[in-house]
Each structure stands twice: as C-alpha cells, then as structure tokens.
Amino acid sequence: MDEIFPIVAGIILGVLIAREVRVLQSLWARVSMIALVGVAATVLSGEYHENWGFVLVDIGEVGLAAWVSATLARLLAPRLRSVGGGPQNSSGD
Image 1: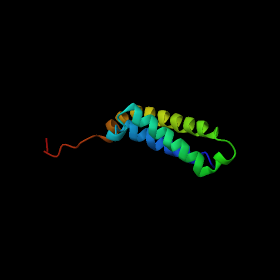
Image 2: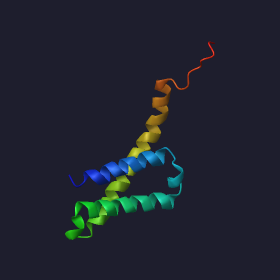
Image 3: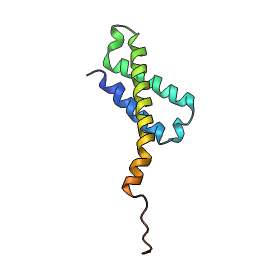
Image 4: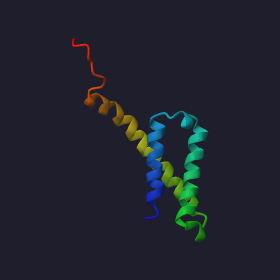
C-alpha cells in the first residue's frame, strides 16, 4: 500500500510532462519534482524511520512511473485524437 503514492504521483508527473506543462519544460525542473515527490513519499509512508535508503527506491519508482506514463501518453495521444475525430467543421461543407 505504501508504494501506491509514488507510482500514482509518477503517473501524474509523466502525463504533465507529456502535455508539455510550462513549469516542467526544463530537465532540472523535472528531476527536482521527481526527487521532491520521492522524498515526500518516503516521509509520508514513514519508511524513513527504518532506513533513509528508501528515499532512493521511492525516487526511482516515481521516475520510472513518470517515464513510462510520459512515453505512453506521447504515443497514444495522437492516436486518440485521430480516433476522436478532432475539431468538427460546422460550416456545412
């Protein structure tokens, strides 16, 4: 159950990266957000009481989830737009 937060947060970050949100345009911003969310996941789950090494595991989970979701979002977004039909022509042509 403790691993749900870093994975879901990583998926959200990945989708935001794929949508090219202005705040996450810079590589440093992306790495910083992944690290911050990973540290937050370790602290919120209480794993830091056992060992601070869990920070590295959680950062890795967030990073991997962000990478996978960003890649999938970039691959699937154009296909979903083409299936959805895109903008409608309402001029009656």
